[in-house]
Image (cartoon, rainbow, N blue to C red):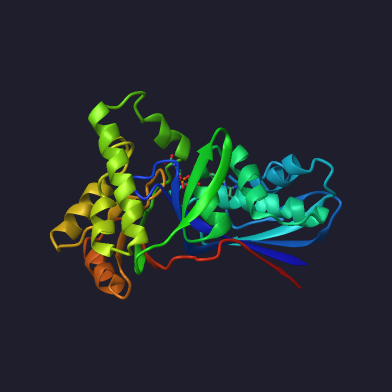
Length: 290
Ligand SMILES: Nc1ncnc2c1ncn2[C@@H]1O[C@H](COP(=O)(O)OP(=O)(O)O)[C@@H](O)[C@H]1O
Ligand SMILES: N[C@@H](CCOP(=O)(O)O)C(=O)O
């Protein structure tokens, strides 16, 4: 039996649309139980998610190796679906690992990134799911790679609304064009955010997390809690709130050790959803053989 864990990811971090992402300590776990007459996957998601070859994890494994012999798989997960925490990317990375492990391939992180990016289309979720930490994914002349960016010492206060928002739907509200000045501002602020990470400057990092002009202004109408949570924290002198991935999850980055106080503040607002204080996953996926 082999067990794969893949972390949840928070893409964009406001400014890094389709290129920046962070791994968090929520996990998708896939157990390869053993060979079977047909592909089956036991999972906790209910009837809406297929339990056969159509399941995203199995489909990904079979897209990689169409002749892969059927196996029985079992999934447990604390990554909610369609909430902006990268559940589909975690499933794709897990599916590729299932394919490679059953086939007996060497596991190569750079190759996995290439394969996962081909399926997912934007690398900001798959890169941190593979490498952990904060990843700046780059596509240069069609070639994808990723660079680890250091982070200030922080924790992620995470608000997960009760409703789903499919990434497809949240991409459909984005404009075809943006004002020239917004593009200039985005470049300046993204460079400053990366720099704040390298300098481990939490105050600057928090201010910059709120400067996006490419997607949050357009998605805010789908996720009214973004403005509410920002206002609540601003009234208490706390910056660092952004829309995680395509939403609807909202994350506020706070200094390590300060999360619990901020959590109590957020709980008082009684918004409909779940509050989690998450730490950063620094290592990406893991594989254990037992
Ligand atoms: N572990 C999984 N097994 C099967 N399908 C999954 C799994 N995780 C995610 N998915 C599929 O991906 C969809 C969510 O993808 P997406 O809209 O990109 O949201 P997210 O922000 O969670 O990645 C789910 O509705 C489901 O169809
Ligand atoms: N850059 C993408 C990220 C989508 O992340 P997800 O976790 O919501 O799937 C986007 O903003 O569309």
